[in-house]
Length: 252
Image (tube, one colour):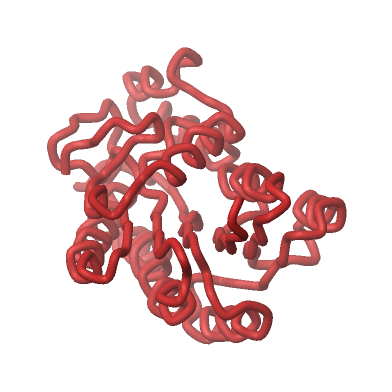
């Protein structure tokens, strides 16, 4: 296998951690991943020491200064990124759109929309030099205008839809340069964030529980396995599409 460099934000837990594990298993792959507090990312630190091909970088996607510092730290080690995966995000449901307060809208937009885009901008010179020129953003089916979910997504859904809009624009802008860019719905995944969300949503509307039925939920490792296969299989002609973890297309 050709040597490759993979960047994964938010690799200290959940889907991000599972993606780091999946890619780091390949001897010819170097993984750069991030955590807000690397020293407290115990499991990620253990994985890094045992694998020998993982670099952990401090990053808070809400801070432009932190993004620039992370870029400098990565650029000091590598001159290219073959696969960029934006995974960092939040989901803090506090009600239906009619009742969602201003701070919640701003918090989600800052973390879920601006954070990934500014991070991609900062790392773009390295991605542009990569052999594969692939960039993927963990989004959500809640971003689709055509799907009707049994949950009030409010600020979360809006932030992911805004992310998708810009990801699609990036895909169109960079298509001529051979990039493959797309947002992904990772599935309904059994993460700490999802568990907290399920409790909040269940209190808002009992019908929300149907989305988190055990039959619909997958583990972070399962999601990462699906996503890795999808990432490896997508080609430039797939750029600008919206995919679910199983490879099916989601309507915008």
